Amino acid sequence: MSEERFYPCNKHLAERLGISFITLKRWIYQGKVKAVKSPSRRYRIPESEVLRIMGKPPRPKNRAILYARVSGGDQVKDGDLDRQVEHLLEYAKMKGYEVVEVDKEVGSGLNDERRKLMKDLRHIIDNGADVILVEYKDRLTRFGFNYLDMLCQSHGARIESVHDDVKKDAMQELVEDMISIVQSLSARLYGRRSRKYRKVVGGLKDAVHDTG
Image (cartoon, rainbow, N blue to C red; front, side):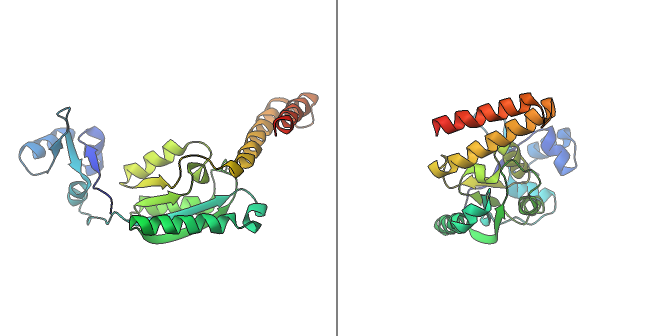
């Protein structure tokens, strides 16, 4: 199981607890709230204490959601989704996590309205899980990973990726996402039927083909 998370004693935490920052500091001084001092002499409060003040039972720290994603049907046929899940299950077993949800999704990493990802984030917000496991960070999202990670951390949870580097056979998917972004922006600037649109998109595709 993972180590307990600590929260900095600040106004944001006080608002979450429904009290003033002055009251929170006074409770620490009076011993009503357990806290530890960091090397910089600032107080940090363990999550178990935060949950106690909020009247919530301490949550176990090993409840995991497994999230696997591919961008298209060809990767499903190739078994990439099932392979991701298999690796995630092995990782969860090695870490001693309790798997509470396994989700497989087909969709672009640029799509911010993926139904299963939204469901998993709601589980985190509702205290239904402690960690979202992904094989690579880009399986969760192509951009904005830190925002999702911050959202999870604000609810005492986290995101873990099994591997840090993008696998080589995922580079084609990255190229497709890049082309999709350029197509979208060019369409807004010039219109899809304009010569400039065809020139920009065509030039990018030619450049990708030349370096492929």
